[in-house]
Length: 390
Image (tube, rainbow, N blue to C red; front, side, top):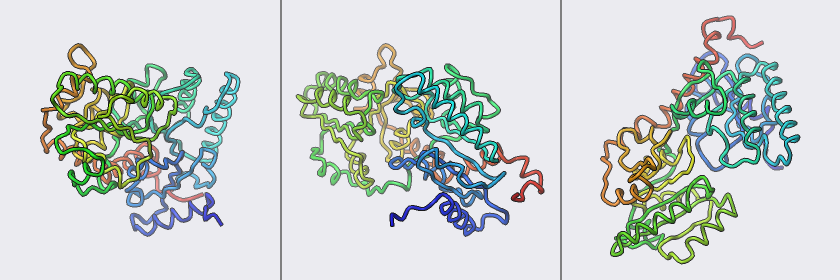
């Protein structure tokens, strides 16, 4: 026996767990979501107050697993990342067939009585062979979605460069911090000892999946330039993350081959290892070439670490009260300049206090479900007859 549960079993268990919370006398809403993120805890943080809000949460690994249980009139299908819809397509004809099949699924879900919610994580995928098909996919989803959740207030403006996003479908609830998810004993000395970093080494950390849009090669160049500016100062750079793009990882390894101060850790970090990386670092660097919503900015704030990153979208939103280490990529304000500023720049503890308060997972989750209920079920809330299950 594998121990795997059927969608119906998952649903019944979720409803029973929700009932234990005593959050209300009526039937819960059911929220089924896909794809299931195995590594990133974002979904679990976003849904952490589901039971209290009157929602039973049912995870699905694939889109094909959605809508297996009919909870008519009280069901939400929540779509996150869309990569699987067109993944592996080799021809324009194949992408067209996949788009048509996906639209049929959206129509089927609606006909079965489900509401459709989409979280707009990225305007478009970072790497794609068929950009027009990806735009068409999002147009389909916008057309068939009952609501669109955005994580940064610039999301709609950026998306409208490629496809329309109606204001009446949109609601904004930001990305939560990771407070309470990752353990953190705060032992800097032990963390540096574990990584072989000397006490006086000024240490930069780049954390996350190793992919071209993350700008790691640009970071390696900036780090070497910073060393040349300060030949008497000791620097270290730790690059750590899932080697998602093997070709790109090869380029990174080639670029750092003769730079002993740079260490590349190719691994999906265990949760206990993340605190070691962050506690050992002086500054986190996220030199994204293209980004919309940045979980790493919330992760930096969770560990109270200064962040060097582009002054855009979700990053700027998180550090709105102190963007001193964010760079515009204009003259005199590039990645290298921000890294140089970070050598002496200090962010006041009150800034991190405010971020941790505003983006606390419990608060964000409660706001999410409140906004979702208002967006999708307001009529039901106003009509007692509509609360009964058919």
